[in-house]
Structure formats: C-alpha cells, structure tokens
Length: 103
Image 1 (tube, rainbow, N blue to C red):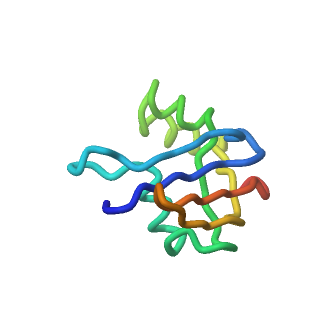
Image 2: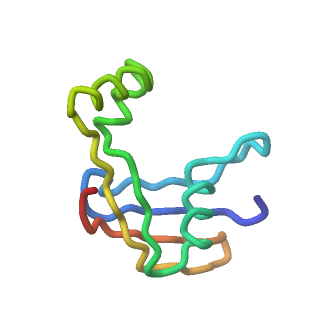
Image 3: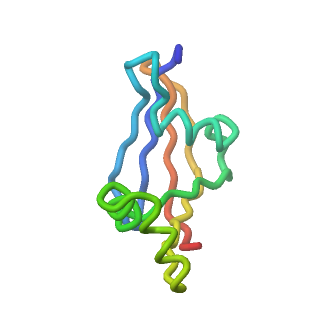
C-alpha cells in the first residue's frame, strides 16, 4: 500500500486500540482490510469488529469451537464502530472510529 494507514478506536472494548498498515507487501493488515470495507475510511461508514473474547476463543480453540458454541445458542457479538474522522496528513491517512453498539 502506498500510503500509511492508522485506524484508532474510541470507546467500547477496543478503546485506545490503534491499527496500522502492514510493512510486509505480501500480507494485508487488519487496518487495510477495514479501510477497504469502509469505503476508504469514509465518515459515517461502519466497522464491525469482533470482541476481544471472540478473538481469544478463535486463537485458542479455532473456528470449530466457535461454531459448536453457536449450535448451543451461544453467540459471539461483534462491536460496531462508526468512522467520524478521516484525515490525510504528511504521514498518511488517519481514521478514527467511535463505539456505537453491539450486534
């Protein structure tokens, strides 16, 4: 990616989390994926982010365990963040998103 990307989360379980683009051209970073899903970080666009608990369960037990939990009626909610700042500066693109709820 030609520009540096920084996405900052405000509120919710990801408060203070900052994602940046990958320096490895062979892989896309989470910041780059979220930027693409949000129309380039357009203000008003929504980002749906997995909860830290969901991420930990996936890392520890894999997708099969999460799917089995769903079979038993357990749901892993996502957190919605709305982009409210998109600013380009000398370093690249800065996007800020605030927590607006759980889905």
